[in-house]
Length: 319
Ligand SMILES: *[C@@H]1O[C@H](CO)[C@@H](O)[C@H](O)[C@H]1NC(C)=O
Ligand SMILES: *[C@@H]1O[C@H](CO)[C@@H](O)[C@H](O)[C@H]1NC(C)=O
Ligand SMILES: *[C@@H]1O[C@H](CO)[C@@H](O)[C@H](O)[C@H]1NC(C)=O
Image (cartoon, rainbow, N blue to C red; front, top):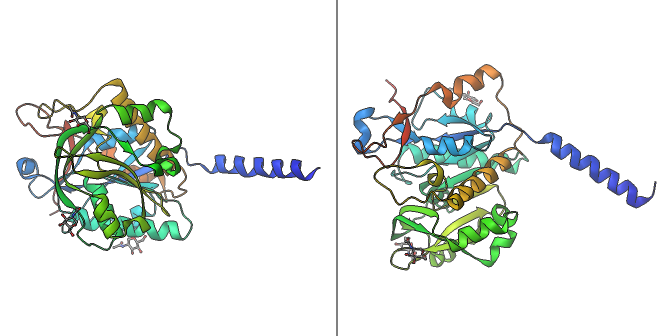
């Protein structure tokens, strides 16, 4: 066999092994957080996960395990070792001091160590999750600027780095066009990561900044970033809202065909990345006992309740 042919054969074997090694049915852990004051009567002291995050993962072939913040019944370390990735959702809790922040930190440290020893273990942070990932990457230094980006829907402005980003380099022209020309990313945040602080806190050691957006007052903020050496991704906007949130409270959330397509694009990117993780639950029973299917979402998007979410999963405080 010629050297070239040998090489091609070897490449084919390697490629097919890679394909075989893909985990077709990844399981993603989603971190819960203390329930907001206005909904606390539903479960005093409990935590919640907005169902939109669960559906977002499920819509592209992932299954979900809730990681319940503050729970002593769940062994989080053991769950981390069985999952294929973690989603840190947005919400209204502290990134400095809350059960959500502590569990996010444990997940971040687990994932860093796992990737360093050659496992593949992705994390996606949305909105508050983006802010928490940023904080954890610079050992808890305060780095955010107060800003005005609540319930506004913005285009993404692509930095030159986008072409080398994992998150966008395989995106179609259609997806990139929609994101850059239409106001279809849903923003619900009052803190922003500016390029000035990104530089000041040397965050470029850890992160590749990929897109920026501008808040109501023209403040420029980083809207998408991904870690340089880890499969960690953060969006300051909420891709899951475009296809799954229709609360009476926020009629402006974008639901156009393009808005839904970009949501699916991001979900598919993340879940596909998690297919590279080889971790599994020790037994099918343990998987079954932990899946979100053991819980029922509650409809809180009615005009009467007027929550910002359509449905949430509630995890009662342990007694
Ligand atoms: C939780 O799981 C870890 C890792 O599997 C194990 O080392 C630890 O003993 C467990 N903790 C408890 C309280 O069961
Ligand atoms: C930079 O971070 C500090 C907190 O350390 C914050 O008070 C300030 O508003 C931020 N400034 C900019 C321009 O982002
Ligand atoms: C659309 O995005 C542009 C650019 O950021 C912004 O100036 C404008 O206010 C947005 N329009 C709406 C309706 O949100």
